[in-house]
Length: 141
Image 1 (cartoon, rainbow, N blue to C red):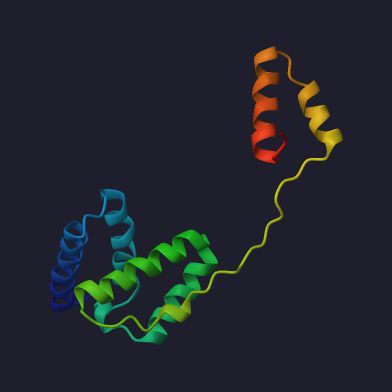
Image 2 (cartoon, rainbow, N blue to C red; image 1 turned 45 degrees about the horizontal axis):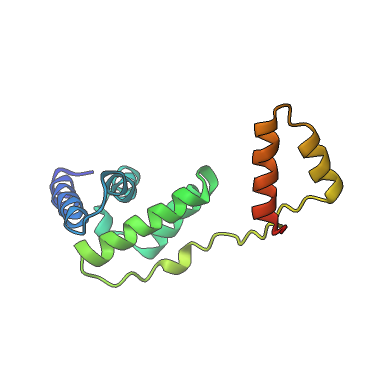
């Protein structure tokens, strides 16, 4: 990054940190939301506010390949905050990231599996805990 771009980036980055603090964000959230700004600054030559939607698509395509969906969503949220609260612009890039919808079946134990689980408890207190947990979580009454 050129010297003038670096100075511009430093000012915007500090403005971003200040905006996050003024919104009452926790230290961990501030770190998570500022990480995508730093990542963009190291990946691209111009300052992050001068990137095109295509640049962001390229960045997120690489991010999806190398990181978890949780990281991708957090980065998107951090950039969205940056665009809205620091640059004062409307975030038009939300459609870039659509994590796959995962449908998971609930864990339902058969009566035989529950009996096997309860019979493996070696101490009465463990048996009681398992029995209590199973009654409350499975709806037995």
